[in-house]
Length: 305
Image 1 (tube, helix red, strand yellow):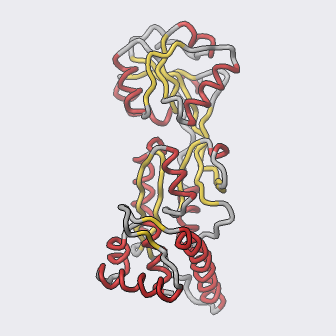
Image 2: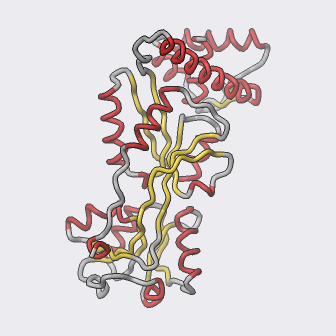
């Protein structure tokens, strides 16, 4: 079982050295155990000619099967311990998460810190990527779970809703629209906008929203991240449609103004993992904790009047 766990960690992290460190053995010892496993099976599991390491077709098949075995083993162990009336099994190990950049770095860092404080033998590793990379890492089981927007877009995944984020029109302080209580889609045809790179899911959904109201926006630029969009808006007369949660710091600082959209538009955020994948107790515990500690949906001041 230890060798199976070691192989799964090598496969997930694409690194023998990182897996060796997690298992408290030398890199040489870890490599020897994986090689012994390959000799026993009579197949090559890892393609060592690439960096980072890649699984062979046989290795990918073996990895998926081993993940299911480990998840079943952990659940069985927990049930046996509970049946004896003993204390619940202590959570230990690492949860590996791939998230989109706009998933909320401050929020996720706080939830990670609180969960690790509650479970001292657990480490939560969160890495941020573009949506396609998050999807690729999740579907190939290079992480335990992903955090994505518009989960219905991604095939082969099970999604657990986290929150719906209200989208708002954002302009610089002093903009002609800054005192408006609400913005309608047709208003956006009167000025320039900046938006997300058209390949991103959020850009496609914004275009769909505007088209549904007969609006073709004049784009001054397209960018692949929210921070660049916010900087552009703060220094020009262009507007943007962004999740309200992502601009609260700038609103507090007085550099940006958020105006509600009518009709309302929301961006769904969800936890995702491969369909039919059985979660280990540690991963399931973190998913439950993450879902329970989402903030209530904030509203711009004008929307609450």
